[in-house]
Length: 378
Image 1 (spheres, rainbow, N blue to C red):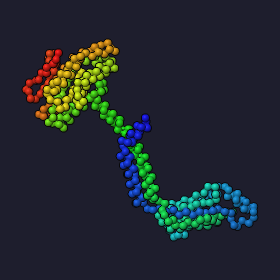
Image 2 (image 1 turned 180 degrees about the vertical axis):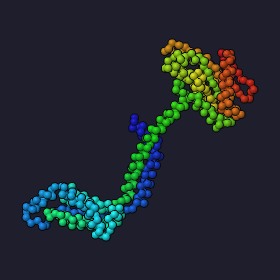
Image 3 (image 1 turned 90 degrees about the horizontal axis):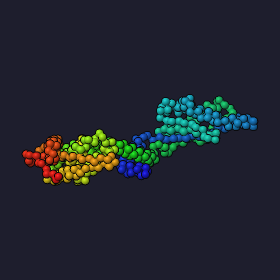
Image 4 (image 1 turned 45 degrees about the vertical axis):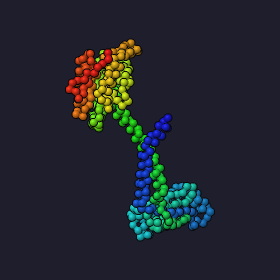
């Protein structure tokens, strides 16, 4: 299941993965185009017993000395030394500081052998080869003046390389695409994991915790958006107050209160259409928005809601039966008022409904100077 989840994340963000790979490839090709080609010249050297040795015992002693890896490593360090580099630069009539700036020099001993490999890398292939041979020549002179038992000799002289080792656009581009795909996949997963908590947080800001429907603030925003975006459309709203809830807000345990509010929410949903909006206005009041609904249609809807809420709600687990005692105040939108004025009209209608125990539904509409007292079926 977790693999499928990550696969869906990658599917949803395929464009991010592709974009990251394309950016990586573009950067790689740009760097390859702008970079100065680098060439490597390689010279190899071998350490052998000195030709000045005459007796077999001398040869055996020299071979025994060569068996110690420290000897070969010492010769490699000689080649890497600043003294040898200065001697080689003077030999080629060059400045040692300039060579160090533009060229890299590395001498290493090859495993299980008495062979040294010297690599000189830089922008000029001819000079790289000349420098490698000069360093080798100066190392040979320096070591022969120090020890007569074994000597350093050329095994292979360096030749100017025909092709640069860097940059390699195809190789670098392939690596960049691979890294871009991997980086894009990581970004896709991370962005999805960041987005989901943000969406959940936004959802919590919009929803009422106890009922799972919109809260008053978000309902007000939705109403304002509906009025602003569709100023010429018809629209009805109502505030449904349930006075019977007041006595149970503090007495019922949280689970019982949530069950009661859930039943109320289910009743409202059953009496409304799919595009109608429900919200919890306050502890005992719910708000309803009926888009594209005129006065007569809203009157019928409010009556249905009222009749449904008149039915008692049994909470068998807690041994109580609750009479909701509903009152409804509604308002019909006209483009002569704004969303806040429409809410104010609905609140005034609810005040009228509270004061009238016989006709507990009041709806305000602009076309009439009076309150529309909706008939209720007792």
